[in-house]
Length: 148
Length: 265
Image (cartoon, chains in turn yellow, green):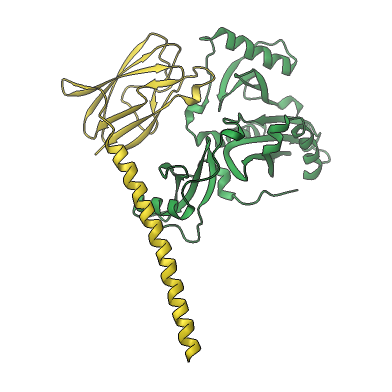
């Protein structure tokens, strides 16, 4: 009987030790999520409001976007004024269709393109260049963030 | 049949690329904006293919420029625009015309291995043989890049050997985005913490019996986790560096679905 009690006690200690580890992992995970949420919330909104539309000037440069992080609010109408500075560049928000815009179209050097879309859904999308612009083309990435 | 083979090959070629966004694979690109880039790329391709033909078109394949000398992916050379090295080719003209006796996969492997052994030592040392597959009487041999034993996503070496005549009809070496010494392989967070980050972020539970595992994406370690989901399971990549979400939904490479120890011949 004593042996059984000792075994049960050992099992209890083992279970509580395991759940302790589980809790520690959850606490760490919550801290990480909280840290990233605060960082995310601290990002300022991009561009300026012009006649009720959030207008964002975006420069396409070998091999970066300026700015490379765009933050808007859900429900807003967004106007992108995109300028290609040095070579042909393409513009796409991966997963979002922009009315009247063909992402395969290259914006040539010096050309400016104006696009409008509604920020309908909160989330994060990649902003990519869709026209080959040189060996660093793949690095030309940005983020489009729509906040609730 | 040839068209089917080409189609399958093409799908295999782009499957590992699409996962990182389709801006990495572009059809019919123009190089006119940079004449030096254009002429050096053409020269490198012509020299490798031993031809003076002018290219018909260019495509982009995850950093490599595909220089087409014949239509329908029949004959092309892949050039790395950084240094103008040739890192791949395909020539359907080297393919058998009629099926006679076939080589075994082991015999085909010996042919592929000879090409593998011509790679620079530092590249060769990071590649590990992974698998062979057979498509339309040709064998595809694949080596994957590992750094400190961790799979680097999307970086590989492939050789396509004709199973009838033994010709190498295609090969391709991915661009290694980062040298070994600038790749972080030690995660700052554990797999269990990454699992919790995924579960808490999506208010879901992990898929049964799925243990998080590490991969390298770019130059950082990423924990691959899998959640149950409401209708079907999905994957979440959690950065091993800072716990941020690296990807959601599908795996960053289809080959990971069969992850495990590489199959040796």
